[in-house]
Length: 193
Image (cartoon, rainbow, N blue to C red; front, side, top):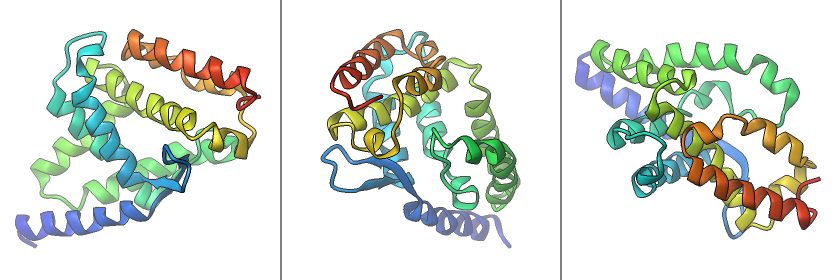
């Protein structure tokens, strides 16, 4: 295949991300979002909220990172954040998926995009910390807006949310502080056990 044909193949393969349903409801609670909507929302948040990053970030790099971070779910599936059993095999499934999906691309793009995915996963750079913070805060925003619908549906506990977000502050102290207020509000309302 030519590089162009590989790129088209990758683009068509990524269309499948639209079929991956997440457990988080849209803000109006009408239905659950899909991975494509989630990734788009994070990319939007990346440039709208970039000023709140703890450290200066490369916004375009961060946007690429959040747009690519869940493409592996085409093969690995979406593992719900509070699914204890599913999370035991998540890393292995995602690494295998990353090899296949990024392997569809021409070598230069394969290396660049896989490196962005690996960087997101490692959460060591300013961009990766901010991207991960967005990935954690966005579902909190939607859960709050939908009246805690997903949390209630799954019997999620406040302690679970806090544990999942133990490093969220590394991306943005400001946004983590806001997220904490949402968690507390929903705990007081009984939306989080």
